[in-house]
Image (tube, rainbow, N blue to C red; front, top):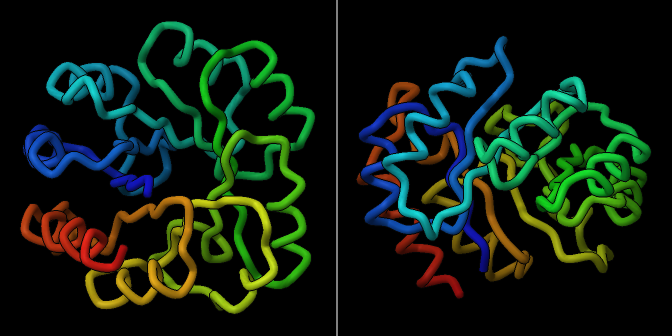
Length: 200
């Protein structure tokens, strides 16, 4: 199972990640978000990051040339699109880059599940409507989804085992669920990973 720790901002976050070893490290490249880090900061933190952990840049309706540039210059390995990016946008990005493209889809009803199913992105993340809210959505909406997906939205140490056992997702994505007072908490990060291994 793929595990992504998202919203990393500090050197100590990276040192913790290096010990816990999730598959993906996510950085928020959206200036108006609380966990925002600049591309230069991502490069700085990347130098500290275990080379086996892939760097994911999270974007919301960013100019496609900016995303292409951050992939081509090696700032990020994977682009995660969290806005209203069209299927044409995703196809153009895939055609011009060799990187994996992830599309996040907020799940409010069955139509959103259908939208996730047909996305041309390499991987889809199913999340709470609005994304990044730290809220759990109605998991029963995923009963008929056939496409492998990464589960996000309000995951934490209290519900991750249930999520893994109930849904058997391709992967999980966590941010606020491994924080205390708005910052990553190494103990919670370790506990979350331990519970995933227990739930599998």
